[in-house]
Amino acid sequence: MKNVKTNKVVTVTLNPALDLTGHMDLLRAGHVNLVEKGSLHAAGKGVNVAKVLTELGAQVTVTGFLGADNPELFHQLFSDLNVDDQFITVAGATRINVKLVENDGQVTDINFPGVQVSAEDIHRFESQLFELAQSHDFFVIAGSLPQGVTPEQCAKWIADLQAKGKKVFFDSSKAALQQGINATPWLIKPNDEELADLIGEQLQTSEQLMSVGRELANKGIANVVISRGADGVLWLRDGHWIQATPPKMELVSTVGAGDTLVAGLCWGEMQQMPAEQHLRFATALSALAVSQVGVGVPEQSMIDAASRQVILTRFR
Image (cartoon, rainbow, N blue to C red; front, side, top):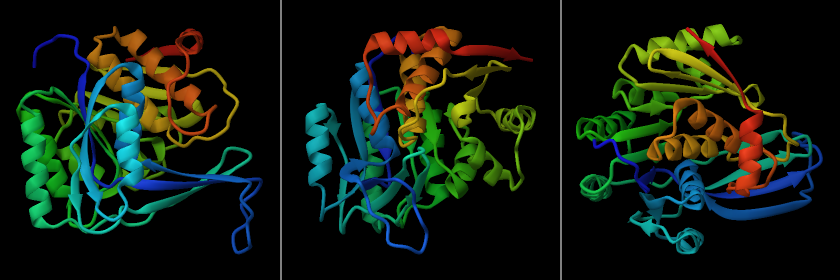
């Protein structure tokens, strides 16, 4: 891949969702809970990444699988963002996920299964994906898998794109993450809980997380990024760890903070930012995301101010 700046990127959301978000004082399991305010909007990890990248200035193409029964909010969002919509339409309805946000910022996710994807749907998607690979060098594959797409199939797409010299940013969990790691994407971004789930052990310290991250890098993954919420970000790059500790923010909602981090990491690489500037920028962008409802890019002055407050620590 040519080492030049680019604004062109493809985000892949294989299992998008309509997010039904409700804000409440306190969630009480087993009781009637009253929602103070709510919203329904097009989402999914790759869709969220696309929104942030677009607002940063990227020329974004979106693809994945979208149910034919309820595409309107997605089409409206893609039109509003002025992105190139290359989603494959499949039978059925795109799932609705429920996010319950308490006043202290804690979020309870209730995620439903996605549409059933057929072999013909997969063939159409593959044709589209590798046609896009002829004119794009950056791909973000983010989120869970719909019914009909196996972790092995997703891993093959990653491996094939990497073999073509593309930079694949991969953000998923469970079996999809396990198989995706074997395909050695250019960058992975598990959070600390996803990494612990991956190896079946509790990981409570930075040292434990870095040890597992080093093992993943030894498989051939160029960049291992571990997000830790308010504790910041660990990034293994060129054989060295950098820890970024974000400034404290007023917590409104953590929804979309991880997706914002992925978008910031992708944009920084597309713009060839130096490593420390790159990490400061992505960490600040993610930190600012928790102080707002929904994903989106704040004013540049706010990003610059938050970036200056990010503390970086290097480890061998």
